[in-house]
Image 1 (cartoon, rainbow, N blue to C red):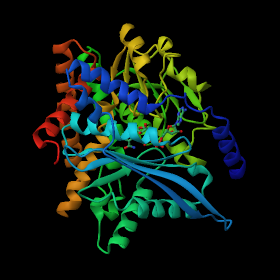
Image 2: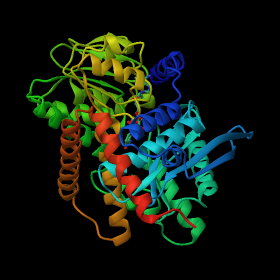
Image 3: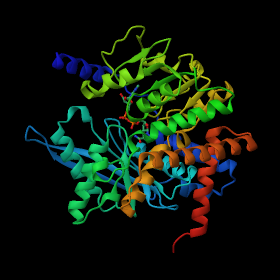
Length: 437
Ligand code: NAD
């Protein structure tokens, strides 16, 4: 039975269409150009902001379980250290490319600046399909990758964290590998670890919690209540499932949820705690095979066009494009994922009056609590979960208010406002520091 379900889940993943072919780095650069023009930034400074400071590409040889050596491509990109050590997750996905990692690193720079924490931006990734690797292969891949990017990472240089298909388990391995190789405990080299090995309470839920906080803020500003608001969530991993759960607990009706394997709709609201329990016990943590009275399966494309108050894309970049933006019926989009909306789609959504709360604000909760974890590791002094959540809520609300006010004063979209705030702060740091030598 288990084997049958596993095979079904595997075949669903294999049949899943690839995400739209959007070059995330081009998207990133287009955004910088548009905002740079609004900020009247000189072209030489713009050219600097559009490229990463440092790029490392590694070929990672792994002894597979069958005895053969397989080589995987991996990357670590540092976009900017103008405001502090670089910070950003590590992604495991078959579609990871250097361009994608460069874009994600750049967005991290603006994100850390928008929430005003003392980090620059970085990102890492390995082109691989983790569902096809055994636990042993995954551990060897993570440890060898860590060893190969070790010249770049460190508590005061560049601090990785989880991203798509990586979690506390991989972060524990990163920390252990760095500590063994350096010959000293290095808890602050990576965030998102388990609590028993230097993680912070509240980190696993932090990004989804931030998304839920920002969703409540935007609904209030637009004169709505979270109670009874209808919500659809694309992606049911770390970010999507926690955001769905917290909004469900706050009284919202989560009527649609999808992951890479399937999508479900229920007019009176899905039972999110039950769906999370199902995913936690399913192979590869997928929704495939879920059933409940009143819930029906819909296509993953349909999920994005449901008639809801709030749509939360929390999967991958390039999901809302010029091809489907005119069919989106949500009043508000809160970007749990990084880069889910293309610049072309942004224009269409703005014309249609859809409010978009941008990724660099909406999903910043993860990096904010990563910052708390790093602070606690450096001080060897640990907080309780309440302290983490109170501080997270304060930072998210402050950042939301700043972006909202900036947008209102300049009659700009929330994305443009957030990018302008983030880029202005980075530019200020670059100007104050000067260009070496
Ligand atoms: P995850 O691996 O835990 O979950 C990703 C989810 O997306 C899975 O449920 C997967 O099945 C689903 N998915 C993949 N392709 C899909 C598709 N085509 N249609 C529908 N669902 C699909 O990853 P995560 O950590 O939740 O990250 C999700 C997004 O949030 C990414 O863009 C990531 O960069 C961003 N993000 C994550 C964090 C974090 O702390 N984990 C922080 C900030 C931003």
